[in-house]
Image (cartoon, rainbow, N blue to C red; front, side, top):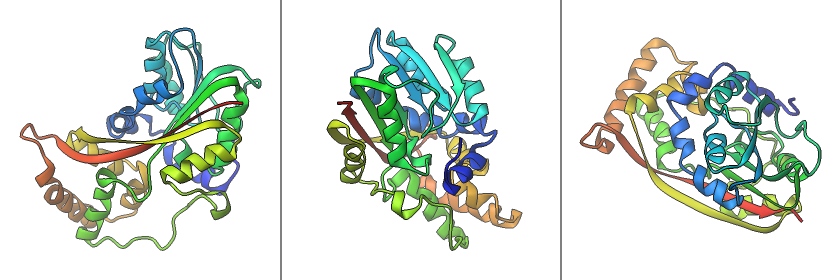
Amino acid sequence: MTTTAFDDHERSRWAGRAAAYDRSLAALCAHPAPSLLDAANVGAGTRVLDAGTGSGTVARLASARGATVVAVDAEPSMVELARSRVPSAEEVRLAALPRLPFSSGSFDAAVANFVINHVGDPLAAIGELRRVVRPGGRIAVTIWPDPPPEAQSLWGEVFDAAGVDRPTSVPRVDAERDFPRTPEGFAGLLDAAGLVDVRCDTITWAHRTDPEAWWGGPANGISRPGLLMETQPAAMIVRIRAAYNELTAPYRDPDGLLARPTAALLASASVP
């Protein structure tokens, strides 16, 4: 299922972490789901593939619209969770981009919510989505932009305040396979895959969450901050937590929820 060192790294990072993801970052990733399905023209009678379903948020919403849903994920714990969350799905199975176990033209639409961030060959991944969607069908995908928005960049501020030494190198997509994480760069990726009527929109919102949930993601090894957190000694974790509490205090609502601006890129296109 893996094709690059980055893919191997991503598989190892998410192994067994479905529950931790569901408690922390799932709500953040859920926000663009309605817009993602709108961009793919998913409605009653649409046969749609949800690639990288995670905890099943997009698949469940598509099913509620009356679509026929097939969902896949590369992580077994995610597949198990999504199966329990979306019993109406036609199928939820283990599979990963850029190799999907479906015939060409099997779907009316394909969506991938924050999945392209986690694959080692983004163009091949988009090309595979194109392959499994019929001519005239729609593809819609989301990614996090770079530079990161305020909600995500908070962790850099926390680590700087705590005095955490950053690693000199972290696993990344090979330069020759990467693309600019900008509206123009993301649209260019879909264009390079041979899709048509390409557009890319920026979605902005304020993410409101329990501060413990936001802390719990990296504290349980989720995302790049989690990779850094799990290598720290106990004394440094105490310092990181103190910095987190101090830096998030100004952004807490009267009800105690943490609110920070964030953004996502939503690109969509048609299959010629």
